[in-house]
Amino acid sequence: MHLKILLTTVCTLIFSTIYASEHYTCSECVSPVVTSADTLSLSPDTVPLNAAAAKRKGIIARVIEYFEDSNKPKKDKKFDFSVIGGPHYSSDTKFGIGLVAAGIYRSDTTHTDSVYMTPESNVAIYADATTSMFFKLGIRGTHIFKDDLARMRYDVNFASIASKFWGIGYENNISNDNESRYKYLCSDTRFDYIVRVAENLYIGPTVAFNYVNGHDFRKPWLLEGENRRTFNLGVGFTAEYDTRDCLTAATRGWYIRLDQRFNPRLLFNKYSFSLTEVNVSGFWPAWRGAIIAAQVHGRITYGNTPWGLLSTLGGSNNMRGYFEGRYRDKSEIDACLELRQHVWRRNGIVLWVGAGTVFPRFSAFRWNHVLPNYGIGYRWEFKKRMNVRLDLGFGRHQTGFIFSINEAF
Image (cartoon, rainbow, N blue to C red; front, side, top):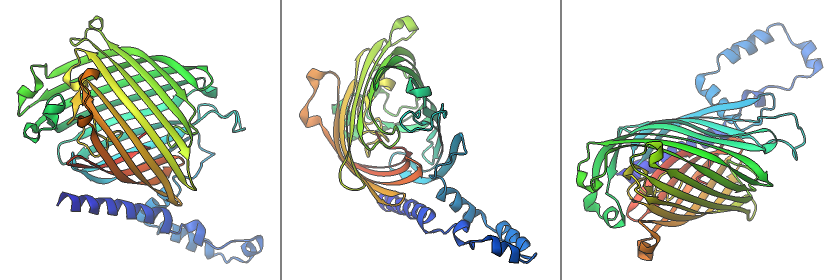
């Protein structure tokens, strides 16, 4: 039953989006071409008739026009901002309404030559609410300073979620008998400021604050005695090597990132731990309209890591299709290979395969614990080089549907 509802929702979103972007003929296309001679021969009644026709344009037609023009470059605007939203369904969060307000801009527009032009910055405000008592509100983006000498990345969000918990560690997570409900409030804030130290190489400080408050655990023994509420403040550094041609929808280049963060007791943390996160992504043009994208990602924590900040699989960016947070432990590794194929005008599809697992330490890594992942997705170019994505992911005995903006990596 859920699969039928899911497919119905996906089809509705896809066909309504395609219709809006491809099959509607805007008023500019149907208006007659008026030459100077035509202007002299127009009767006085023509202007009121055109004005009346414009006034009669309904809200649906105006919405369709809005989305039809959303990906067209607007050189007269210093800040190009648009809003999109709609219904969605997933096995994790059930029915919901999502809203994304996305903008692109340049911090410096003094250079007209594309060779020296500062790359575009981006920002997105997102909100989501579902029938399963899931609510999330946040803002994220990347601000690129003049001549790309520095970058500031930020993500601030708040969530109130009724979710599920299987405990800690693969052996607990794989057991369906451990499935139990709980609720939690969480708030995450992160800021990175990186400076270019060499061609395509950036390094700088990072700071992160996390608050997690879990309650109403149906099986509290799965927490293994850990505190249900934790505050954590971490500091560290980020290093990046970035040769991508675009931050939001790369078609070529490499992106290599290293995050090192420390959460010591010195910063009034009850749980003292550190984490190292590594991401390596590559993008290669294939045949016409096709991009091959690959990513290897790892998040390793060591020390006394609290349950709310353990490494997890699943969600909108890695191992799509798995219930986010079902598989959790001190460390995780995942990999993904993706084909991104442009199909027609603003429409595209994606196919991917991947794998990943969680483990407490490298010596406990087991190949038979590696989980498979694959899926299919639809892409619609909401703004230039900024896609709305609908992904249907499959895993071991799990299926998930994702509605988001920008590529998974």
